[in-house]
Image (tube, rainbow, N blue to C red):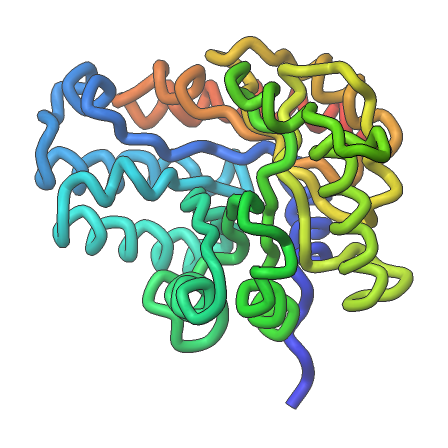
Length: 282
């Protein structure tokens, strides 16, 4: 049986066709109320219908934030499962923002939940936290590599509070985010020599310093923080100038502000997608 196509190759095809923009599907309580849907499991279901209709066409990637679905209990998780399955059936790549990360058999169980054949919430890529070490993520890494999925390791987050840890330096002077990128590059060199590997990084363009060796990691980058958190498309282009073909810029609140009208949502998506195409693809 042929190996599944890598997430990197599938992203490259989507990027060429529709651009790299990732539509964040974040149904917060405030948003559900603002849209007039009600902060309930029923309102969440209506939100899912609207965003799935709006996304197909203007963009090729969506990013549900799992917490906003989980807060509605089993019905919310059922809606998340439907969102993932429906989006993938429509040809959209799904980046599931779950930020899991533990050790040993717990990581193995998380990997079975989100990655590869038989996973009940099977996404194309997921986010993970590295605080317990990349070495503890063997289950995630192997399952991502085998299934053609992608593991996006939080390296430089968009929130300012994270800078204290992410810029902390070891005795050799290397700061945490630099070491993570170096270790991700080493993993990818072993797993996919000469290619973009299955282990990527979350690197927000809301923080510009210190500069990082992004190209050397041989990976894809999820770039959150566009729009409501202050990053502009031009910031994304500047931060990822050395590897513009590897960045997945993500916007959520600034796009969802156009809802709940599907036409207005699609128009907002089309405008931002075109701007990113001009900056990162053309």
